[in-house]
Image (cartoon, rainbow, N blue to C red):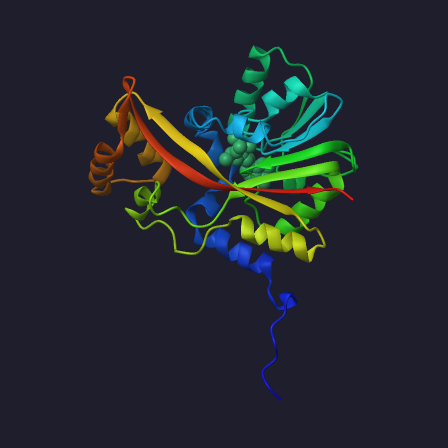
Length: 278
Ligand SMILES: C[S@@+](CC[C@H](N)C(=O)[O-])C[C@H]1O[C@@H](n2cnc3c(N)ncnc32)[C@H](O)[C@@H]1O
């Protein structure tokens, strides 16, 4: 007999996803609430400078009477604009630091239609924390970097009544635009990054045939001066010793001066995975 032909069923996308999480720094850190606790300020600055909210809000189909579930809401990137446009928003956010900032932002905007669940999505129970089909829309923006992803996706599908939107990086770091900062320190094994292709295939294996849109999202960081940029990326990339000088050199060559500040501008190739509940 000849060789057995491989079929879709022979690929364990969940196992490959777990390998990608273990093989990439982002994968190892993104799911740790403590990691986010320490990075509230610069993260909020980053999403504001990149207009992440605008990029996402222009793509969501929402109505004033909707209830939306925002998983891994961070400082409120999408939760706040959503709360201004829908009946209610439920936030799932396990980082105390992010949650505290979100609540400050909510108070500034005088919004009263946000409910908080201070947990990881894995620990949220349907029937206890939220109801099945209790939210018209579920959104998870750059927050689904967890093991046991299959259950996380099944739970999202159970929680939603109408549509789901997941935003996640697409492909490897773009060689031309910004990756060189990372390749400086050889921080990732090539090809290993928990990106959209795993989720898309895991959904397929669950019988969920999702749409994918690839977006060249902005990823802009603004700094008052070089030293602030060095400090920022030093923390972000865990750089120390002699590598700090290489970082400084890279930044002084790549930051662009505009309107009195220094900018590091690149694109973050992002996928929007979306589906409608049958
Ligand atoms: C990159 S930030 C994204 C914040 C916001 N959604 C945005 O796009 O600007 C990731 C957020 O997901 C949260 N997060 C990490 N692991 C999570 C988990 N297992 N369940 C729910 N949220 C999680 C983090 O605490 C953090 O606030």
